[in-house]
Amino acid sequence: MTAMRKAIYPGSFDPITNGHLDVLQRAVGLFDEVLIAVARDSTKHSLFSVEERVAMIQDAAGHIKGVRVASFEGLLVEFAAKEKAVALVRGLRAVSDFEFEFQLALMNRKLSPTLETVFLMPREELTYISSRLVKEIARLGGNIDLFVPANVATALRERLQKPHR
Image 1 (tube, one colour):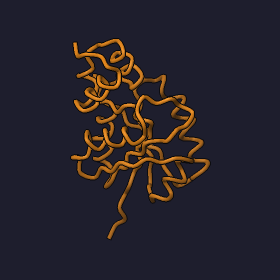
Image 2 (tube, helix red, strand yellow):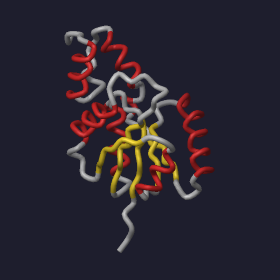
Image 3 (cartoon, one colour):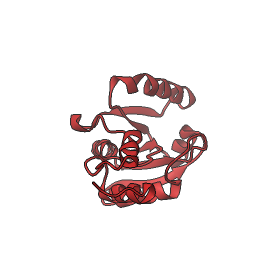
Image 4 (cartoon, helix red, strand yellow):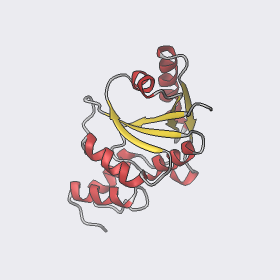
């Protein structure tokens, strides 16, 4: 019997976008289980609570076989060890993401030498999407339906009280 290969896809996911979901679909093809780990980061001011983000992700991705969603706090490598994960999945949208992600991967490797980091890119037409930009478009009342799952678009409009254009 072979060991189950579990990966963790960590992030704040405030909110999850179609780009995140594309990276998730790619990761599911590589691992037996992908745990979407929503960070409880007290240094960031999030639009949605951790519980709201977990619920939105479960709604948007819960139908995908091999996907689980949980929140975590503290060191990611410690959470990965507790979950018996073999890899971290990180999405790269542009070259500008790489330097920061590379630093994180090297630090995580130093802290946990057996935990690998796998970089995946979304489809080209999704590379410009970021949670920050989607929130700004929603704040200004723009149409975000192409960038996020329907449940997330609804939640953003309700939270920011902007009608759909």
